[in-house]
Image (cartoon, rainbow, N blue to C red):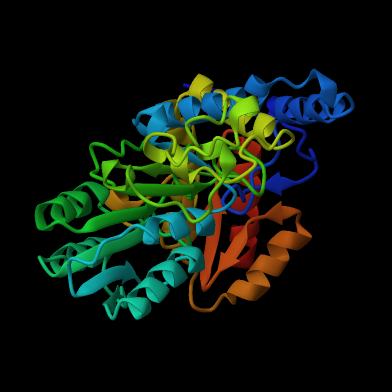
Length: 379
């Protein structure tokens, strides 16, 4: 099992940061890579044509290893909204309704909502209300039928970490011919993901959370359903002749194969790409399975200490160890409790009525004990 990796980061030693779902801290190596990239900007005459493409291919390769795809199925994006823009620009109408879940993250929600409005497709939102996680998942699966055009959801619920049954949902989508679109931002890099086994048609992930990348970079997987699609912009870098700088005005109408056509313009991003590549390399080195085990060890301490005190957690089958919520007793005001945590230099997020805890390998048992202590003093 992994040991705590706090020494690879420059986190303030006086605080407890349980908020990787908000933004990951920068790896020390990522910081060095950025400084090196800035130094390289001093002398652009050293840039060769291949420098515009090499790091992009390395990023695609490292990300594909994490999600079980081919590197040619990966696109470099500036944001999840950009990724969803490409996805919904290439979805064919083959049903009368689309499905999303209650409180989906806005980037995905507005993408599917606007597509439905444009194409006169009914958008059905599957609400949880007072259902258990198992009942809610069953409701989602039962809602998918031959009239379903698209199912869009996050890989886990971004507000409270509740697991969604991606395998069963993906199988049902494949059976009825619906597109299965997943926002993997809050689990990819911290929880195992295999897009092929899950029958995911498109997976979009922000880079600055569990992938230890920079803000303003995202990554996307596009299955064969999208390999002949039309991107939302016409970047010269996405043409098959883009490596030949002397031949660019022999306008090649052909896009790079598979997902390469969806790469954002100025794909290389000389300053941010080194941070992204470093984060992906580090995740591959640790191993997602080992990250999962480490987070589970810390989460189990929280559960064992707080569940007997009437703090509620998601049922075991649908609990995520790297991102979960604390179900506070009704007599505790969530906003006031969050303020108390801030005063004690413990940083996590309030999302809706959920006190969201998000753990990663830079956390240790001392961080967990500090959180437990504040919770106990608030009861």
